[in-house]
Length: 206
Image (cartoon, rainbow, N blue to C red):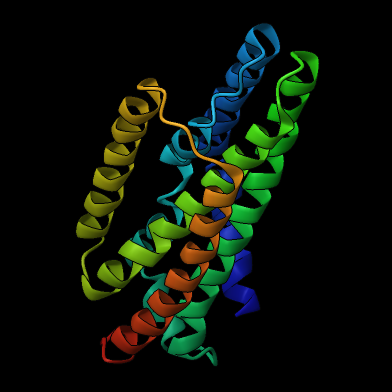
């Protein structure tokens, strides 16, 4: 599992521009918060548009390069291959939530905005990232062609981006308690999704 995680980290480094886009969007929101004194909690959802599909991109890259076939002859089990993807997604969501809260928190501090909204934005970010995996990784493991994988990833990213913009433009607000409940629910869904993906991948011929 360690080798697979290292490979995915290298893939992330090669595609760091994806993170730059999300960070740029977060910085813009932090500046806006410092000026207006209002925290746009929707950034927690919108920032995932660029990086939420990363696990699907990992799998697509494995299939495109033939790395998935190499894994078939390695000591790592199919179960560990799947679990590594979910583990990495959890790490990305937690790290992203921390970075978002730090950047947005600076803007909130300067603009005397409520820090509770920063927490809500971070929880929404982590929740959305986890939901990407929980809802769509089982489908990704079901399909065998990388083109289908990327189509799913791009469609989901676009839909979430447009939906979040419309939703939060209408002054939709989320309390810290509701955001926490959504995050815990997403964690449970991710655990269930991991079990489903493991069972699907066991029956898949690499």
